[in-house]
Image 1 (cartoon, one colour):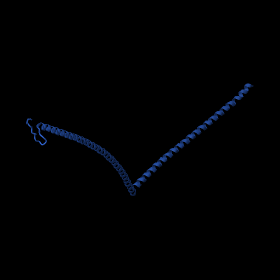
Image 2 (tube, helix red, strand yellow; image 1 turned 180 degrees about the vertical axis):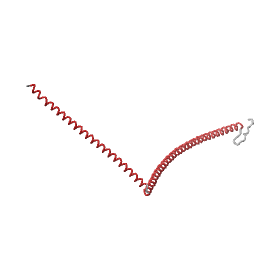
Image 3 (spheres, helix red, strand yellow; image 1 turned 135 degrees about the horizontal axis):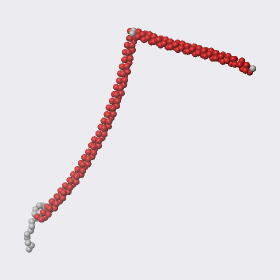
Length: 204
């Protein structure tokens, strides 16, 4: 009996395994279908994005071409040419004026520098001239003092010489006078210049 029971229970287990496999196959099929659907959707989205980019690029290209043609057409018109010519002339004049103003500023600055340099040179020359004048004046004063000292010394020597000459002259006169007196006394000449008579009378 136990053996009969066990033989009757085994078939339901086989049936459950078959059902499970079937569910797995269905699930796998559904997953594959979902994946394929997602892939198709992603592919469709990518194609749409690519088409959109291509369309956008083409549109931009066409717009750029149209703008270029429009600009070329506008630039080709006489009014625009005249306007551009006027603007070029105005810009050129403005540039020339700016350059001229800059050159004028540089010229003024250069002249100021030259004046400052010349003033500095003149001041230096004046300073040197003042120093030279002071040196010359000092030398002149020194020469004058030296000349005065020489003159004073010469005058002093002259005075001393004159005094010596006077003293020598007086001495010579004195000596001559003494010598004459001695001679007169020896010769017997008196004050009147007559020789005194010598008496040869013998005393009686």
